[in-house]
Image (tube, rainbow, N blue to C red; front, side, top):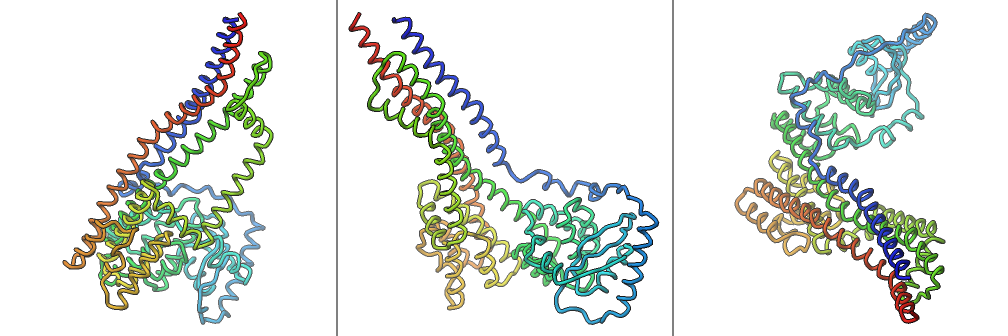
Length: 504
């Protein structure tokens, strides 16, 4: 009998050992590698673009030949277009419309693309000047509804794409290339991304029509951030466009790093919690049920903690689908409420910002982005009222938006900027007193830059501390969970062993 019990105990230990090692090496290790990688700085390709050949993305195009019949149809369309352009009212529209054109590119490829302009004449003139052979240009209310402003076409660029574009544009301007020609070169570097290519074509068109660069950027809808547009507008007044583009590339590079640190800090603990829940679920669904047969074979009576564990396992096996659907439903509802209901979003942000350690991560991140942006705007001579308005739009945190609006009100009343930050729980004292010092000495922009550097270091430090702390905490937590379940399932075995010993 003792040998049988020994075999049972060894089997139990082996079951838990293989389950634990399987989860640890098969799930945790890959996840850890993934999130270590996600916390790296922005892709190195955007730091070395200046050294790269700007024409490396221009590849030889294989042109599909046009049949004689197709060419005849195209020539007929071209003839009709020329008659239409000759009789078109020369008065341009008050706002740009979306046109769909069919033309042969300078490489001989037949293309059908969209273009935003004030008239068909403008579209034709621009394309012909670029070496296109134009066959047709069409527009309609339906085309403008589908592809116009606010449609699927005008999407905000990712930060790393913006960094690449700013770096390349600055490089071309420093090389003596005109702004319009630099934008046209970048059209070829958009590769297969038709959305970005159309944005560049629209920019080139606006510049050709005599628009300023800032207005051309602004007319692209939500593609370019307000911060960049205002910086360019200030640079046009002072004549330092190349330097401003470099500053903005560096600014977005730093912001991308901060955002990745924030993402890593918030995601890593979340994944750890999901992983712990996955371990518990796995054990309850696949490990604990194996002991039911053992208890039945030995005739062991279970009670207390063991009975609760077995009942919980049975319940989860029977209702796991409903449990998962319930969890997903709750998460979807919470996410929807967070995005759509301002009061709920503010409440959640206040709760998170009062959680120890986690709250500091959020506050340091917001302070870093705010002060870095403020410093850049002030250094580029953007009006203070426009500066505050831009700052209120760069954050989704309702608490800091309120601070920005209070700042605007203080400026309107003639009060100091720092008054909006005084004794506010979301503004660290160090940041407040450094802002006060900057105001009193007339070096607000420089002091804001120092605040940003200080809290960026603090943010990075606390993120790295959490990441290094999560691993041992996870291992201890998993050991406690596995140990708790092991004790729960082994207790009846000890009772059975004692009963058998008494009988012997």
